[in-house]
Length: 456
Image 1 (cartoon, rainbow, N blue to C red):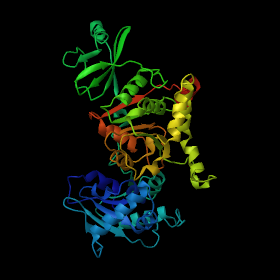
Image 2 (cartoon, rainbow, N blue to C red; image 1 turned 90 degrees about the vertical axis):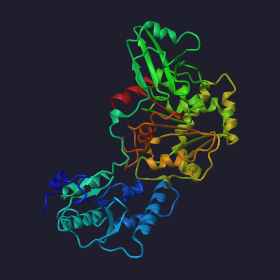
Image 3 (tube, helix red, strand yellow; image 1 turned 180 degrees about the vertical axis):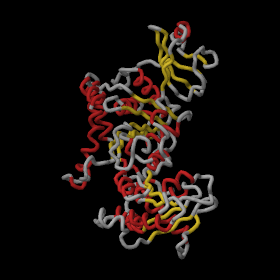
Image 4 (cartoon, rainbow, N blue to C red; image 1 turned 120 degrees about the vertical axis):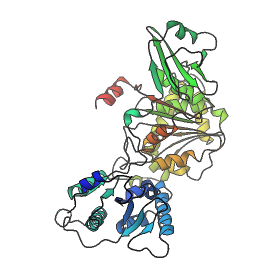
């Protein structure tokens, strides 16, 4: 048998004469229906079991149903009336795609994987391709960690689909920089006049500041919070302003509030661990600016934390969804409490009753027109890159979109800290004039919550 590891080492994208063969799992297609166009000159094999599974996902309104329909239509267009054993061309500069019908159980699976389940049939098809391709590397592509382990155990090379993955977590943009050792006189300039200093005149050790990037500038005991505005190309002092009863407790929260209240910024991402105030700040900013928007929408994806989905919960649709929406109601309660001596609590209740402030599952947003909406999407780390794109491309004139999330708390079975849509969005939008991001590092919920977040 040909050593697949040596084939992988000897092959490269430049060696078009010896392309690889990638066998795709169902979850890769449901993650990205356009994945077949992203393997360069290499060939693609689709097990018949994958087509059977995609057939079950054709009907529905969620993103995975869209991906299934899109892929099947694309495959039908590519293959024409008849699909030959050699497959069909994917286009100029790309490889070919074929369907693996599957055969009897491979000898490597008979004893160790006797149970007849889709994953094992996909493994069987991949081993069939491996036996046929004696001179080319065969690689199973799946987002299922368990299936990758099974594949490796039976001698198959298995990899995750990484086309839309962020390169490195350490390189992920945080939205802020600490600048130390600045001259005292330079710090003082931000506390005179309007608190703005043109970038061309600022004597700061900063090269190429990004649009709406934030800076903590220090000199001994002196410090100032600033943000870079790409419109007037100046650094502006950032103050800790109270917003609808919520006062920033640290520098990152002050930066977040400024971005949330800035009309020139139409897309904001707030990342941070539990209790860092992401959703609370976004909601307070929305209520502060409620007169500027037709509606405030709060949404979050529904990802059950166990195998039992919402269908098992008692009650009608509204009752089933309440447990998933409760964290958003909790943040409203905090804001009401902070405004207990004013009429802000009554205004919030009035907004809810008049549908000016609406909390809804993210799936219910599909098809809606987002004109002059302040749109907060919570738990964005559980969204795929395609879902993120779908949401943003629905933004109409006057709409502002806020994504909040914690990339270390992912509940989606096929996403991780580097492949989720939230990380992908942050990585792709860096430096855009309409975009701002801040990573909130300190938990402010309570000392106990902060301790648990750090140690457990």
